[in-house]
Amino acid sequence: MKILIANDDGYLAPGLAALVKACEGLGELDVVAPEQNASGTSNSLTLSRPLSVFTAANGFRYINGTPSDCVHLALTGLLPTRPDLVVSGINNGANMGDDTLYSGTVAAAMEGYLFGIPAIAFSQVNKGWAELDAASRVARRVIEQVLRHPPSTRPWLLNVNIPNRADADRLPVQITRLGRRHASEPVIRQTSPRGDTMYWIGPAGDAREAGEGTDFHATANGHVSITPLQVDLTDHATLPAWRDWVGTSAS
Ligand code: MN
Image 1 (cartoon, helix red, strand yellow):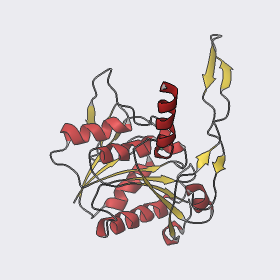
Image 2 (image 1 turned 60 degrees about the horizontal axis):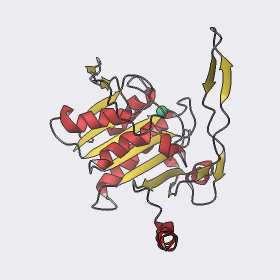
Image 3 (image 1 turned 30 degrees about the horizontal axis):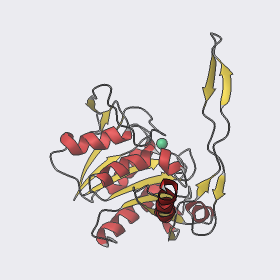
Image 4 (image 1 turned 180 degrees about the horizontal axis):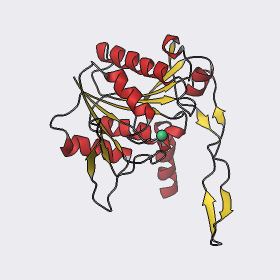
């Protein structure tokens, strides 16, 4: 068993060390993570400059690029053999609902999935790394269980969100769908010391669709949330209506 471990908070993040600890003894581990915090970079690849790979004293490799760069490089030349599993995290904060589209943590796992490798993204619900040891034990349990009894012979992509609780590893697991968030808060306008107007992207909106069965609902009610993700963005439900629309608008 070979496991590739990445994240988006950077190679020095406590959550990365916690995920490595979760994987210890399960096989051969390779860590390839961004040099800097790259949260919110989604699936971006660095195409405008070359990338450098460095090795830290603890053996972690780090790259001056994005989470997707890390997994992409690892799979296309850095690693001598293809890993059997890609894991990402443990992220500093939730990746639920629409967050998953922006998340570098999910993107790192998704890059593995796009290469046909099963992959799991792990996040703690609250920022600040509280109860990270318990989250590490949850990650261990999920990885062991899914490797022992894979739900499908096809590659899968799981998004796991873990409440910051000391008893997180004793919480029941719930299979969920993504909730939805309200639109982001407005931008925050500031003036720089040199008099230029600058803008901060506002914080994410509150949960809008957080009913039973969603990731928001599960974690708020004392469950570890596992959402199986797919990459196909096609709106299959409205395909027939759009085909009719083309038919009628052409006549
Ligand atoms: Mn992050």
